[in-house]
Image 1 (cartoon, rainbow, N blue to C red):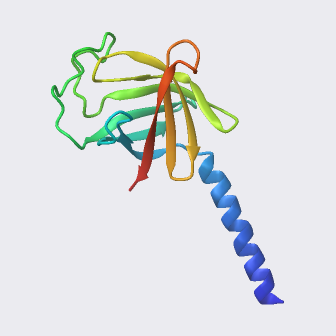
Image 2 (spheres, rainbow, N blue to C red; image 1 turned 120 degrees about the horizontal axis):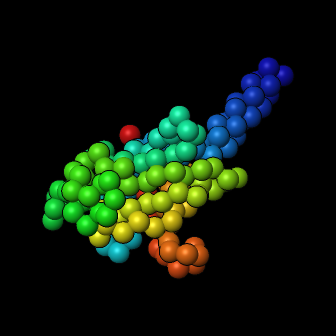
Length: 143
C-alpha cells in the first residue's frame, strides 16, 4: 500500500512540475536561425518587477558581421549585441506569452512577438500586423 501511495504521489508531483514548466519561459535559450538551422546565440529570458518578460543576448555563438546593433532605430542603436535586450514587454495570456516585441539585431527591425513553450523548446514568433504574416523560430532550453 505504501509503494502504491509513493508511486501515485511521485506521478502527481511529476505532472505538476511538467505543467508548471510549460507555463514558464524564464531561462536561457539557444536561438536557432529558422533560415539556416544554425545556433546563433543564447538569450536569457527574465521577468521584471512590472510582471512583464524581457530577453537579452547573454552569449554569441557565432561571430556577427557587426558586434553592435547599427540598424536599430531606438535606444538600442549602436549598442553592443552582447547584453542587448531583444524581447520587451511580453505578458502571459493563458498558455501563450504575447503583447510585446522582438527586435532582429541583424536588420534592426522590431516586430510584435508571441511565445509558446512546448517542453524544452520555445516557439518564438515575430510578425507584423496579424500573426499570420511573420516567422517562427524554435529556441532550445540550455543550462
